Length: 262
Image (cartoon, rainbow, N blue to C red; front, side, top):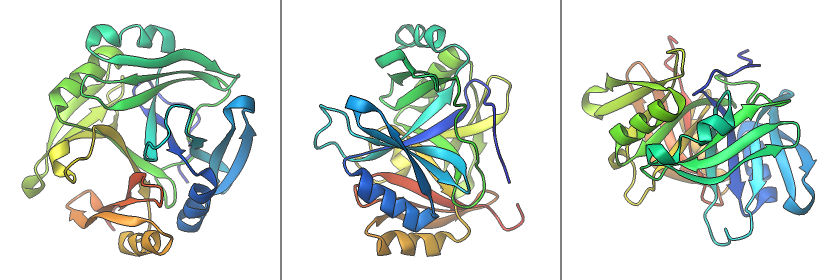
């Protein structure tokens, strides 16, 4: 079991679904991954549900805030930072946009919502009581994150300048090029790929991957539960089998099984 109680700066540390129908979303992911939920009453901001698996916190399910009416549901990613105020102060000079914060989330931590120069939105999280995802890299838990953008060089340059993240190219053969991202200590923690590898019209964003035992069975379960297949299952040598799907509210994510030898 892979559990985590600390994240170095630049590591994806939390995933969050923003959806117009929290009840339907909770039922879908419970049916797909076997998740349970802890209900956090946020007062005027509504309820924030924390998805759990075998008692470990995995990510959040949030309602859409005022002004987001009609916006499709989406999965978002938070990157761990040591000092969210200092990091956020670098964003605009590096060509990004600060959309909210920094602000405290009770005693759980401190956050900011930003957008990189290519348009991909991402959160910054300075841990307080809550470190982030407690369990990952096993079936029904998060396993990988990547920045999908129309300009990989601009995006990776931004994250290097603002968070100290590293990057290096990875030859994918016939699948094209891919860029690996590392945290401030050089450990590989995610990736970045060009928008052209996804269906036309996909906006810049941070992808969320969930580990599953059987990708094809998981895709079939997604459709059975009212979701949809977006990109068919494919095998990537040395990486595993994966497929892009969407929940009934339109939030896209990936299901991925590592190679059998991994």
